[in-house]
Amino acid sequence: MLAYVFWHRPRDPGAREEYEQALIAFHRSLARSLPVGTRASALFRLPEVPWLALAGSERQDEQSAPGYEDWYLLEDYAALGVLNEAAVGRGHASTHDAAAQRFGAGAGGVYALIEGEPCAGALGEASLAVWISPPPGSHRRALGELLGDGMEPRSASLWRRQMLLGPAPEFCLLAGEPSAGVGRARLPSGWTATALEREVLWSG
Image (tube, rainbow, N blue to C red):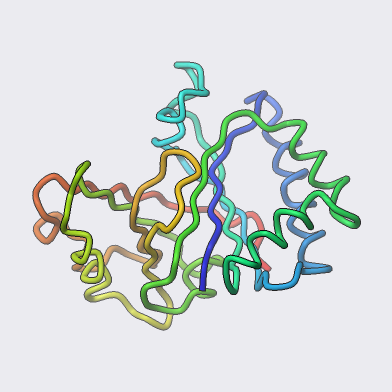
């Protein structure tokens, strides 16, 4: 199971309601006719997206503003290509373009499921996302397998980044609350964990 995750903010911070409605309309359009290989999608409002500033596409006054996070659950990499084409194709182009016209800054990544329930974790039941990054050049990647220690696998999930489409953390734990595996005492020296509360705007 893969997930394409996309973080973004509107071009005009004063038009957030219109931006949200355009985003929800796009997700609803996808849900009515899911592209082959796409299992589901979800949209969340976030208090902040720290790594968007690293993309170098934001003004200083936007770097601490709230943002949004899209999750698209995919069966495989072929499904990612199908989703990319379908999003701007027949049946979805108008809703996609309405959102794109309001788009400001963005970054994304492709993540693979390590353990847990993908739909429960990615589609709304997990109100908390803990994003974990090892220091540059770290060779302890296998430690990521231990980040899920203590999580409830039926209502949480652990993901590892596979493909980088802009600045993005390497691991993600989706759960109702942090597990022991992402506790400060458990993380190796130099590793960082950023916990973000998520508000569901669409899930389906």
